[in-house]
Image (cartoon, rainbow, N blue to C red; front, top):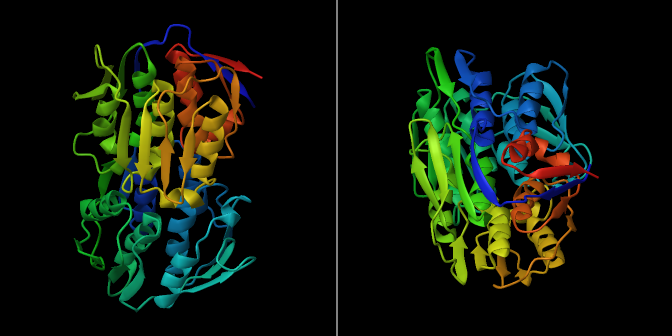
Length: 409
């Protein structure tokens, strides 16, 4: 489905309820599977979380997780350490093009039994759950933090715990620390110093407890973009915390440079357009700890006519699409002057946006989510618009509440 978007006033005033973080939700669902005494509330309603719930709740040995990358990584480690269970995990065609070899090799180091059903290094996988007795595993520190988190989450079930040795410079530290904090929240002892992560085995009985998932900062990023691009804006988003575990909470600092203030309340956050703000000619952000913000920030800068240099983006090559190439293609169509490398994006300032451009989404939810705010500047068309259900099913409804006009094509 194509959606034509425009906003006639560029004035935004509204309160929205955002569901729980996808990242927190899937981590806590793995912990709940290990320790059923845990109750998890305010779960994300994203497709990735639905895929996790479906896989964990089904006795079918074939687990189809569709496009859900986090679910693929976490369940690979979960089932590899589930003694006596044999499953196959598959996904969409794009999922079968996303590498998982580093995680498989790490699990094999521990003594797990995994094999590739098609192409070496890629899903689908056949997994025979084993009792794991090895206590140390090594893997490159520059890999997706989801591989590392997958190992951390299953470590408490291992008889002797686990020490993870990371070789090189660590990528996405906040996501590793999120996993560590959630483990500690449920009573599991951890240590993360330098390039070593230690997770103790859990002995005894887990206390019953209710865990509330914080709302998703990645979803909040699109409203930061809207406030930056609006002529006047004040948007309240519920259930955000000042002491957030999510790496994307850095939004509040990055978007201040693009004219958005953040105020915390008892209910959440209030985003407001800074009065008489003059956009800078260029901004430079290292997003190594928050790479999922790259699309949103690049689009915001294009809409404001601000140049940007974004670095630390090497993990974007293996997401739902090659996000750097996709950004280059679609922003160029809009009239931007942009170039990308293997790990960076460079946008020139001052481009005048073209109207009625159809944006391809490449089966990537963040392409649709990130480009939609440009409708505050020029009418725009989003192709395959329902791809947003992967992480934010209510997105188009929430945009209508903010005064956006949506027409199906």
